[in-house]
Image (tube, rainbow, N blue to C red; front, side):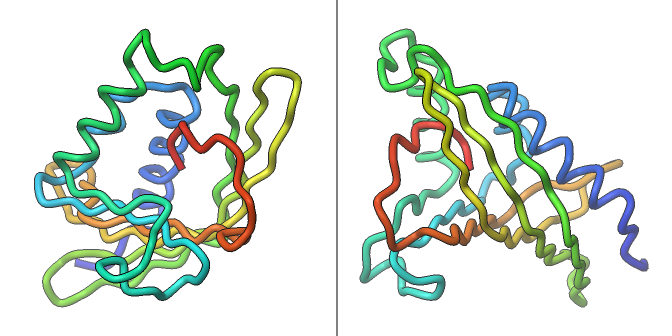
Amino acid sequence: MPVDRHRIESFLYREARLMDEHQYDAWLALWTDDALYWVPSNSDDIDPTREMSLIYVDRQALEERIMMLKSEDQWSQEPKSRLRRLVSNVECEESETGEVTVYANFDLTEFRRGRQQIYAGRTIHTLRPARESFKIAFKKVLLVRNDDYLCNLTFLL
C-alpha cells in the first residue's frame, strides 16, 4: 500500500495538538504497547543504554510520566505551560513490514511564568497502521540544543 502523506501529516498534526492542549490520555492512546520514546542528550546518535538521555522510556514508563503530569502534585507544571508547535518538512519512508518511518521538523514555543522558550528539532516516528490511523511504535526527538542547558522539560516533546 503506498504511503498516504496526507494521513500521516494529519496524524502528526493531531499528535502536536494533543500535546499542546495537555490531552495526555488521548496522546498516550496513540502509542503501541511496545513503544519506545527517546530524547537523546549531547548528541543525536548516542547509545541510550550506555549514555545519558533526556528521556528514554518504554510504554510503562511513559504511562508513569503521564500519571505524574496529570497529578495535582506536579508543582513543576503549576501553572501548566502554554504550548504551541509547528510541524513541517514531513518525509515518509514505508518499509516492507508496513511500518512507516516519518521525519519531520518542529518548532515548539513554551510560555510559563512570564518566560518564553523556543525548542526546535526533528522527530523520527515509526508508525504502524492501525484501523483508520496509525500507532506510534517509536519516537525519537532530536533537539537542536540537546547539548545545552534546558529549562524545565516537564511537558511533552
